[in-house]
Length: 168
Image 1 (cartoon, one colour):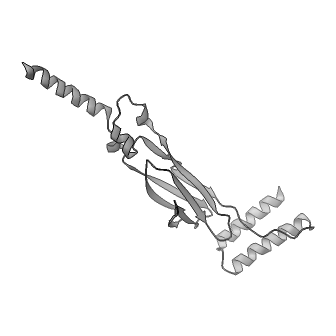
Image 2: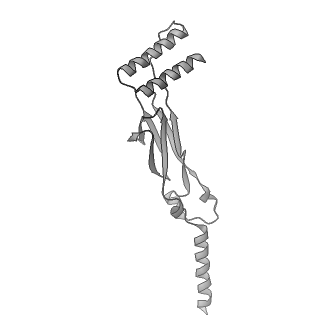
């Protein structure tokens, strides 16, 4: 007689477990994040550990926050934060505690991180007109390129940004 109630209870438990889903199995504990910079080729570090040059993909644990820092000669250092944010599994009626512990209830955002780096050039001499300032800054970019501190693509990008700034 006890077996009559035991079998349906086990089957009902299996149905509940299978339909609620385990986020760790479907989402995983880690997530791939793409880091890009404009211009490319910046040295990147995540939480203080150097990981390579942009663009690159990295696999990060879903439950943690990360600070991504970029450095490139001739450009300001940039930093951004990648944060865990609740995903669609958070809305389910039945949830597993292990999903929270392992971070499967969150997604890292942004998943595709793009940072536009700003060129750094010395201040133009005071008292000149805007054309002289622009010329001085372009000559500084030329000097960085001649000294092989920046690439041809970086030089082109810096000069375009200078011209854009002074024509507005």
